[in-house]
Length: 54
View (cartoon, rainbow, N blue to C red):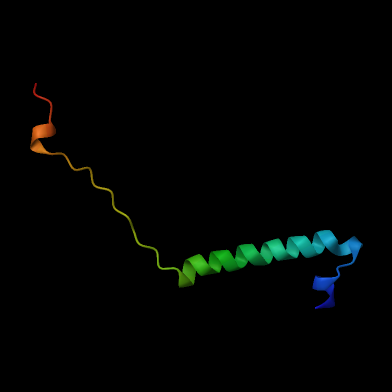
């Protein structure tokens, strides 16, 4: 815990990269297991009156 509050200057890059990797992993797991994705289906609705006359 002391490493997070007062990191050693030699290890500051390692601590930052570890935090970034942790954030990315949690984000991916959240999207896969927790967040329910709704599939959006886009349908092109064409009205009969909107068609161009040939």
